[in-house]
Length: 283
Image 1 (cartoon, rainbow, N blue to C red):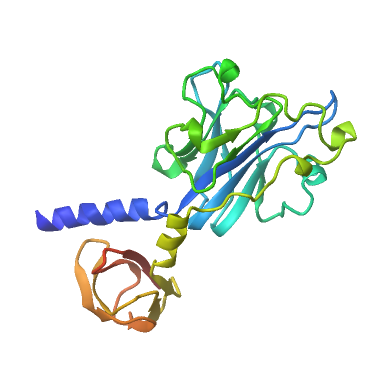
Image 2 (image 1 turned 60 degrees about the vertical axis):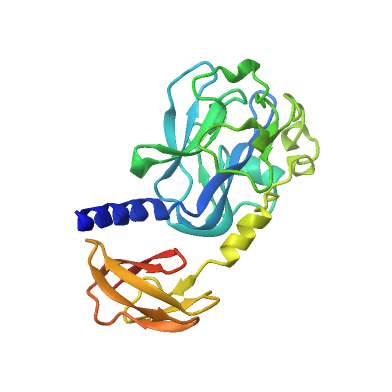
């Protein structure tokens, strides 16, 4: 019974740890352009910490609909403390926000160009039954007449807030509808970066302090040794394999190498006395 409970805990840790550090929607823009020209529409996301975003998707729910459609990827592989962009048109974005986008931080959304400011948007984990990680708008409600409708406008997330799996309107700065009407390069006006500030989201003081106190370890995956740093004092630890068997215990000091050479290749969890859990990959 004890081993079963421990195994359940380990599975929970493994499925949840990837998002202990988070991805959040920080800015959404719905530009306006004349007929025949492409209005820049895009979503900015912030990766807080190191997260593998491969299975994270953006979904849309049209204003009067109740079903979520389309899975737009936001990237592939791990990203650390950076902004990502899901855009409808690369040229339209670059014309209005020069120097922001790169090939590495940008994907093109298949449905983004048809999304209106009264629609709902959410970020989900497709590998976990579309578990909602962050959302803008109220699921199932028609946003056309709601206070959070940003048609021909934009929204930005308040610093230090989110992500939230239920919509919290107070977390957002929602500009009034038509703020971007007749604005931007396609109207031969100033680029939208004179009105919309990207990469402005910052973490809260508590977020910064919490992250600064986290244990760091490298390399991961490791072949023989892994270095542990970020410890204020020496701490006892216990390491388990994926089946919940204890494979190692002892005392670890700051900036000390931990010898993994006797372990088989696989995934291990190292738990310190202060409650932090490290997921270690042994090659």
